[in-house]
Each structure stands twice: as C-alpha cells, then as structure tokens.
Length: 175
Image (cartoon, rainbow, N blue to C red):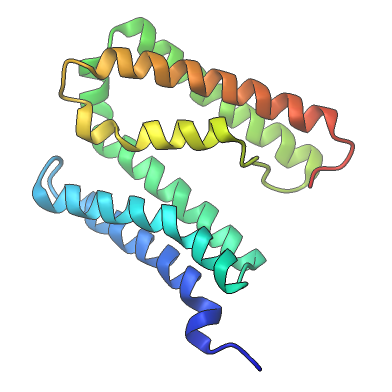
C-alpha cells in the first residue's frame, strides 16, 4: 500500500517550516518575543524532521539536501543576528578561536567536498553536542555565563572537527 502524500512529505514540510521560521527570525527585532519564538520553533523543527523521516521511512536525497540547506540558512542567520552581541560579550582570544574553528570547518567541507564530490558531515555525538550548545547562544549571550559556555563550546567544536577529519581520512570510501 502506497503512503499518503503527507506521510511521504511530512519531514520535508517540517524542514521547510524551519526555513520559514528562520525568515521570521531574520525580520524580527533581535531578542524580541517574535525572534525567540521563531528561533525556538526553527530549532525544534531541526530536532524533529530527521526523526519523522526515519519513523515514516520517508528519507530521501532531496530531504537530506533540504535539511542541510535549512540548517546552514538557520545557522548563518543566527550568526548574522547575534554577531555584534557575541563579539561584544566575548574576550578577543575566544573570538579568534571561534573564527579559527569556522575557517577550519569551511576548509574541512571544501576539502572533502572536492575530494569526495559531495557534502560530508558525520553525525557523530560531538557534532550533535556542538550544534546543541550553539543553539542556546541567543538565550545566554547576554548573561555572565556566556564566556565559560563559549570556552566549553570551542573545546567541543575543536574535538568534533578533529574526530570528523580523522574518520573521513581513515575511510577509503565515505558512507
């Protein structure tokens, strides 16, 4: 029996809602109720869409690419909205470490994109932890705990990048 259109496309609909939530977040004044609602909504859709796709057996290449695009748009939008607050809140050495991590991650994606002819991102626990910690940035960027939080986040991001790189360099063919 063929699945209904909704079951086949529900995960992609949820992912598309993340894009809509991100657009609302970009338009809303930073730290407003609308911003936080849209940001939280987008984050929840990120946590749910993959689970829904797996539960319904509706995983697809299109869905995977849509999810990656929505994730990138959401992350870049969050950085764009919070950049000045993050820079104002953190000591310069931590900012330079974050910039270094960002540049290293871009180089990682470029290297494996060129050598593997596709986007490569492993679903290791430290990548998930990095994303989880980064998600809470808007909620704590204006608090006194943000600097130690950022230090822990940097340590996890560096370790995650190192593990990701090691995994991909050791595999003959990426899964």
